[in-house]
Amino acid sequence: MPSLETNYEYYLNTDFSNHIGDWVALYDNKIVAFGKDVKEVALKASEVCGNKKFLLYKVPSAETIIYS
Image (cartoon, rainbow, N blue to C red; front, side):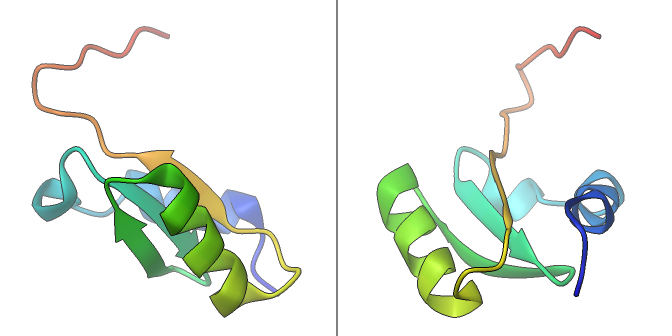
């Protein structure tokens, strides 16, 4: 079973520029759902993944600044 850390590493190393502004759900290093409505994306991901955990995040625009 893939871990959230594995999905996060996939997220960090993948170009998601075609999903800017979308909510994206990752499971097993694959996009299992995406769209503009977070509830719809989470519901679709839950249908695909069952009771397994998936990574859900919003792809930021190029103008977004992330501080750490």
